[in-house]
Length: 241
Ligand SMILES: [Zn+2]
Image (cartoon, rainbow, N blue to C red):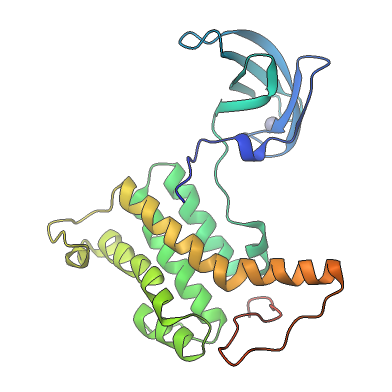
């Protein structure tokens, strides 16, 4: 489930082998762009497998360091600056949730584990508020609301509760007793990585999968099923109020 934030493979678009001009998502301007390779050489450590090079983005003119497999410039294994992980595009339908979770990812990549934790907690709160929880309530009450409204299963409350603990440690330096580490006053990268994955799964269940289902049904002409007795979380999403 954990993902290397420096992994660029997922964002690779295509590559024109005809010239030294790979098309990748540029880490500087975040657009799919052609790169002019201005220098390249065998990788010092894995010279028979990898090449390293500098490419200039033709859109923003910024240089990017890249590593790719020999004779496979379409397989870029690393870049600097790295592409940052972004909130799933589906979350854009929910601006407040999206903003909080995306800021968590920005903080994480910038090395601010504690900033990431506070923003994960905000993302969960905004998700609950979207479904009618009160902003002034605390996270446990907001999560109770989601369970009572059958938006989440009671077990999933535990996933989101990780963001409550992480947010408390990061914002107040207290509460790590619940992680069996009463001395802890700051979250570290490992904590942040774990909490971000819980938060991502929670948001995926509440928002991302229902949108993908809606789009899939639209594409295949299959109607959205009636809400089940168990309380499906599937609902036509509306913009954040
Ligand atoms: Zn660029």
